[in-house]
Length: 81
Image (cartoon, rainbow, N blue to C red; front, side):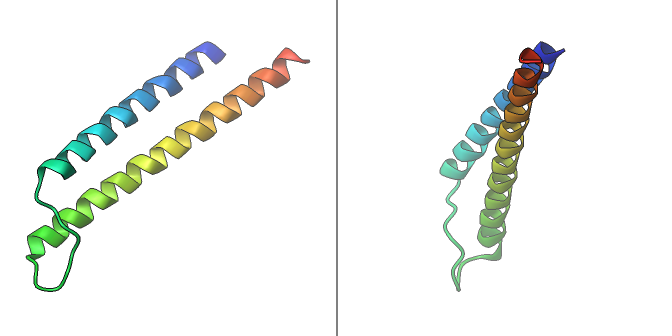
């Protein structure tokens, strides 16, 4: 059971890493600059969307990390029972 959970967590981590790489490449390819007064609204919305997506991916990384830590702790508790 632990192995299945660990493989699932690793799979989710891989998906999140690929998602982050895609978002990073999109952000690098688009001429997105930080929002300043006088720039187009589309530029500002695109910048905000990319930043929000990065924040979501970072939150996913954190959830996977916490899940793996809890899984390891639970496994160690069961080993030393």
